[in-house]
Image 1 (cartoon, rainbow over the protein chains, first blue to last red):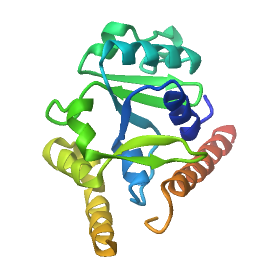
Image 2 (image 1 turned 180 degrees about the horizontal axis):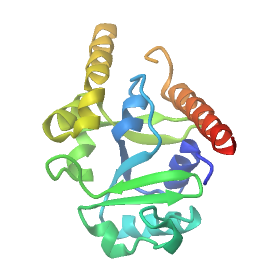
Image 3 (image 1 turned 180 degrees about the vertical axis):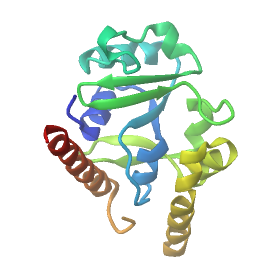
Image 4 (image 1 turned 60 degrees about the vertical axis):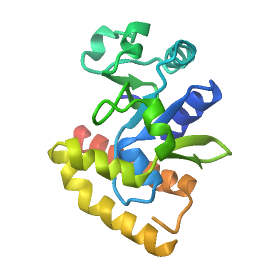
Length: 163
Length: 30
């Protein structure tokens, strides 16, 4: 079982100048929600340059598909340029690379709804805002997403009060 | 969690997760 290290993955992506936005449970935590998550979900830019950078980092992180870990299938450029979800395992734990989320929202669509945050040691990453995260989960979320919605809504209320 | 910085929130999550993983490993070894 690989060691789990969120920071190591985020730092590797950032150091390689990969364009990505943290979404999902980890975005909720970075936005202040008291929830737990086991993996990193990011929406990446599907530009040619970014895919090339991403592939280099994935190789360094020894990333492969976690559905059949014994086969150690690595993502190809065509996988990363698609709108689909690539559920990978890296030397630092699970990493989900999402071409789009919600109703086909891409990196470029989500960019105006993200904010840059320092996740430690000056590593700045873009994180989806809580309002958009809630809207996406409300619209298309499954059972697991809906279960966490009350916590996310309450966190948003508290953040608004504090402003 | 709201009173913490994003970096501190990440540390809290990481530490919580490490504890869960440690418990899982202990249980698996039983």
